[in-house]
Length: 159
Image 1 (cartoon, rainbow, N blue to C red):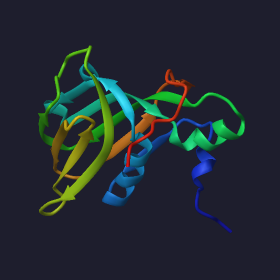
Image 2: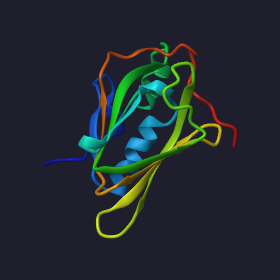
Image 3: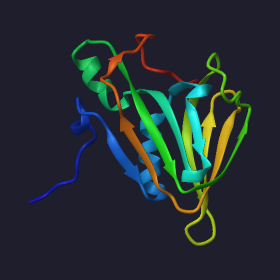
Image 4: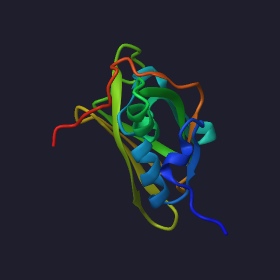
């Protein structure tokens, strides 16, 4: 008998997930909500049709365990890689500025003709990054050990 993985099964293990359709991308978006990164940690490599961001992701999958065990909430550095990128555009983003810290709110996908589509990285402060892709192929991989979140608390949003 097999059963689906549960959210809490990921507890202390590094994430290494991929998205090949819009439903998969919703899962990655949820895990990346409130990730922060300096503007100079984004890179588009046109010759490889790849866009990558090294971000400091809040470990939402660990929040319940942290609260239960009364320990600090955590962040982890993760690599977001988007493949098959044809074009990148941004609004309200100071690209390449190490002093500008961006906060990722969500990642969305709008399908186009055939397998083409648009991935949108929505940022706090009305900024955004729009990637035209030939096909949806996104990966999210933790690349460091988790560390205590500097804020010592989970991100909160006004409703």
